[in-house]
Image (cartoon, rainbow, N blue to C red; front, side, top):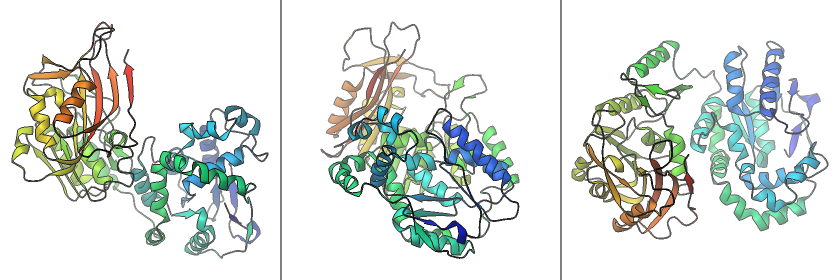
Length: 494
């Protein structure tokens, strides 16, 4: 921080529990335990501040268990400057594990090429592991009393203290930069690379750098109620159970989700569970770094609508999801009516892919996940969706197992499937592609000249464990649209 409050002039005890000797194993568990201890031991009825390097998803459970009133405040820094400052601090003699750090990162280039060093502010503020920057922004707006920026620390801290009813003390400068010239050189040389790899954290930072955000927090000085009353929460939990089984784990708000890790239907058939918000973020990484910003979104075979809700939370103005099974659409409509997030401009229908032809609307982004390999004529089906897509089409599909050592072909293999199981199609006849080669050629023919493979989890037919492969591809209408979107991994699944 650029400046710190002078403790002698502050009418509140400060409890700091972040002075650990290095980031050893169990660091976050230790921090969480110390936070809870400090919270429980804080003077009853007094104003105090507990400072520390806590992950929000860790301490939120402590806060739920406590009867203390707590105002959550955090401070953000420009992500590029934070990245460089973090490195310079860890290599200085002020860092408690300087030697160990230098052994792991002997130079800045090594640090620069370590993915775990990026987006740290976002990771610490996520309401749960894997939350997107948009989900994190909403959680901060809902649960935090305020956000300060290091770059305007004096003004933000003064405003915060006045809102808390505390006097504004004199300030003293502490923790000033020791190597400003070195920091500037690193910024000029590597700034663009750091910025590219910190896109989500930059979006988080810029959201709260907007001066209007201070007014947003100040309107919530009164006690904010829980999203759901105890009675409403119990009613929703009962309805979620009655609507099961769920394939999509969707955040309803206030820590309430539609599905646990594994659920079962009435025939004891296992129904897998996915987290659409995570897959949505992974699929469209880098293409919309500041959200969908008023774009339209189509989900073909939408299941419980999880990707539509992810798109809406990412700023989509209009979403449409359809599925041939009424079971899934009942779930989607329930979530839309009861979740804490905005559901305006969202529509769900029980419909077949063929019904899409008659719709007059087009969409900016189309999600075609888990549908291709359930269709009797998958190329014709994909063409219906492609013709409705103006910009980006995202497709995931199962792939047929290949013989060990065999090259990937460009064919589709016929298969028959159940028409009754919830996780199957309804036509019985269906087809499996060999792998990305065939799908890329099909997408090119459909008018998408640029494609990228997000992943391909390949299987071989002689593996003891039977199963299908799976792949995901992003396709764009315009050449150059996927510049910077790197090809993903091809993994042999055991």
